[in-house]
Length: 476
Image 1 (cartoon, rainbow, N blue to C red):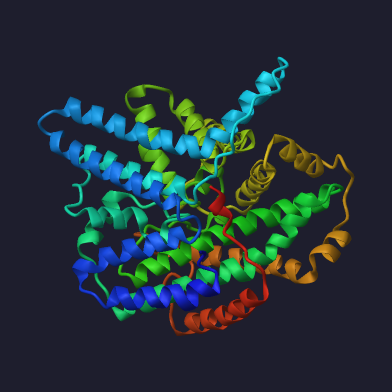
Image 2 (image 1 turned 90 degrees about the vertical axis):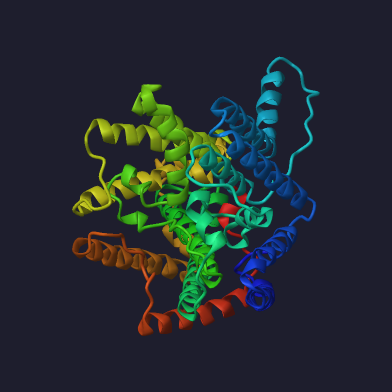
C-alpha cells in the first residue's frame, strides 16, 4: 500500500483515524502497531514475521543493555555488539546476498565453474529504514541518550510507525521517545498535517510522476545523445527530489495528524553551493545517522584520518542505497569531491552568502552523478555517461519532446520554477531570522491552503486516471 493511492486516502487512513482518536491515549500505541502491521502486510504478509522478529530482538537487547550499563559496562558493550551484528547480518542477507552471489558467480565463471546457483532473495520493503531505527534504539540506550520503553507496545509502535515505515524519515529513538509517552493532539496540528500531506501528494503525483516519462525515455533510448541524456539526467534528479521529498512531506504530515513531530528530511537541497552543503540539505535523517553512528566513531580519537572517514562513510552511504557497484561509485563520487572541497577550502555551509556560480557548479556535479544512481549497474551507468559525453552524437531534443509529450516538459519547467521560488524564500528567510532554517510552505496560511487544496484535487483526478506508481525509495 502506498500513500498516493485511492485505497489509502479514502479507506485505510479514515478508518485508522477513527480508531486512533476513538481510544484513550494509553491504547493509541496498540492502534498504531495493529494498523502499521496491516499496512506492511498489504505487500507481503510473510515478511511481517521478519519485521516482528527485528522488533523483539532489539527490544530484548535494549532491556539487557540498560540493565548492565552502570553495573557492568563491558558486558553491556558485548550485548551491544551482538545486537548490532544481528541487525546488520539480517540487513546484509536480505539486501546484499544477491549482489554477493552475483560477484562470486562471476568470479568462479572466470575459472570455468558455471554450475554455481543461488536462489534469489526478495528484498523486504523498508528494511534499510527500520533496521537503522532499531540500531539507533540500542545504541542510544548504550550511550545513555535515552531509556528503554517501559512497554513493549510503545517500542513496537516506534519501529512500525507506518507513516515513515517504508522510506523514512529515519527516526532516532532519542528524538521520538518522549513523544511515545506524551504528545499533544490538536485541530491546529492536525490541519497543518493535512496540508503537509497534500503538499507531498502534489509533489509526488503531479510533478514526480510527470517527470518519470522523461527519465524512462532516456534510460530506454539506445540512441540517446548529448542533449537528451543531459536533459534526462536533470529530469531524473528533479524527479528523485520531488518523489522522495514528497514522500517525506506526506510522512511528516501523517505524523502531525497523529500528534508526532518528525525530523525534517529536506531543506532546499538545490540551493547548495557545494556537495558538502548538499548533504546538509538532502536526506537529512540519513546524513545525521551516518555522521553520528559511522563518521564520528571512525574519526574519534584519530582512529582514521577525517578524509578517509569521509570516503568510507560516503561509500557506505552509496552501498546503503543499493546492492550494486554503481551505487558504491555513487557514494565514492560524493566522497571524493567532498574531500576535495575540504582540501580546496570551498566547502560551504547552509548560511553562507549565496553565489550563483557555486550553485550552478554544484548542480552540474549532481547531474553528473545521476548515471551511477539511475544506471542500475556499471554497464548501464557508463552507457549513460557515453551519452552525456556525446559519444553517440548530439541527440535529438525534438524526438525526446515527441516521445515524452509536451506536458512532461512543461512540468519539468514548473519543477524548476518551484525549486527556484522555494530556494529564494528560504534564502530570504534565513537572511533575516538566524535561529532556525525555513522549509517551503511548512507554515501554511489562507492563500497557501487554497493553493494546496486546488492542486491536491487536480492531483487526485490525475491519480485516478494513471497507473500505479510506487515511490522510488521503496527499492532501498
